[in-house]
Length: 309
Picture 1 (tube, rainbow, N blue to C red):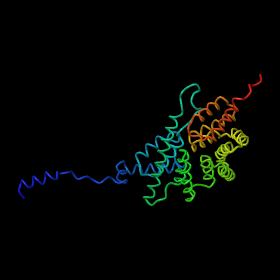
Picture 2 (picture 1 turned 90 degrees about the vertical axis):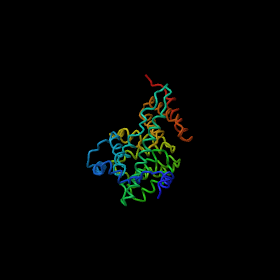
Picture 3 (picture 1 turned 135 degrees about the vertical axis):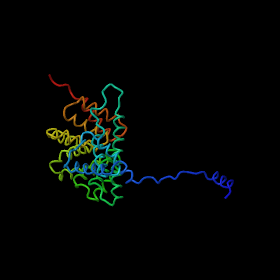
């Protein structure tokens, strides 16, 4: 072939370096030290079983960092998601009165963190399926948990049905989550049925969380006196604050405000209750029937007579 012809062909098809195919999940994992990720996966499984140090139960960042380093280890992804949900969205006492502050940053942070947790748990389930292994126990239940906390009751119901079908958790746990899903969907009769059934079947060590959910359902279902009695009794429980935090982790931010306002009102803390009711009513998420109930509670605080001296 003559030099002019060769030059012409090269001009038509300039040389390109060969491109390597994109790395597989295993290659990406190996690039970060697969043996290290395997060990972290064993640690995560030990933490979940109670056999190892929690290593971040109060701070989700260590496991979030490990999930970023080891994006294909289901146990790590599950634990990172669990801690992210637990630590997201503390509402405190609401914005300071007389200020223009709002809970928008708290809501935004909560949605981002729980949304990340949902992505991790879905990746854990998908990766387990790709390996032809069962996902971490309760993974499907945690997916439903995240969807409830994000205020997506329809999607949460589908996810919870899948968790029930796979026997992911005890029935009393799925019942009390189902009660919250029904409450968010406005099906108060179903919420009451499930809350009552969960209350009958929950073991003693987990009964406080179930009672908080039942009190919330009772109040919204038109039985405020029964809800008040339940909450007053709960305040005598030594672990009631931890149980309330655990209950709140299942709720969207506006429902956390509602539950906390209700508890402060029952606990004879009208100033905090008023702040929390105002914060709840300032949110766009509550439906009109829920706003009416909240406004009644707030009005009852305003009408309280001055104490006799």
